[in-house]
Image (cartoon, rainbow over all chains, first blue to last red; front, side, top):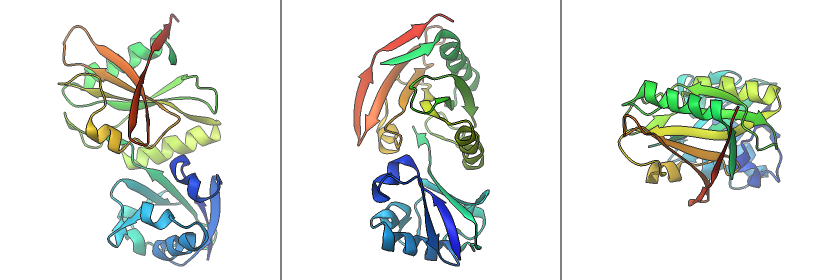
Length: 90
Length: 136
């Protein structure tokens, strides 16, 4: 399954400045592993102790993966995966 | 330096006053690369808290898509402090992920006089900058 992944500004140092890259996988976890193979360092920015980082939002198409299985969320050929760091503070 | 229209400043302050004592948050979009804030977007504070804010994740995606379609970016990211000064807190610094944005803080701790200041936050380093208000 090939998907398009939108990369936020803060993580583009890992993609040579590219705003979006392709990756493959049947689940979000597999997509992230594939991203890591081609753009080393990304995984650590997204995943912590086997779960998605609390302050990173990941969407498959329009769905926040928090509500569709997290790392186990299914992806289909042609899906768009969007990564957006949470905008938060105190 | 942040150069910003008076009506946008007034809108941020009004939003902060309205949500007081909870923190208000939002962004001001502008043409990509222009450094010119033009369109204010009040965001939902998903935390509804007097000490913390977080953009609602679904709304954040919707607004991000709109900005991409318009060739805009977040020129200003603002939020309020309701009991402390308009200076970035430790959590503000920890979660600052937009090095190109002006981080604007509005303090509503005084019921009459507001305080509004602007910062760059890059790699955990806070640099305050002057705010130039253009009468609109």
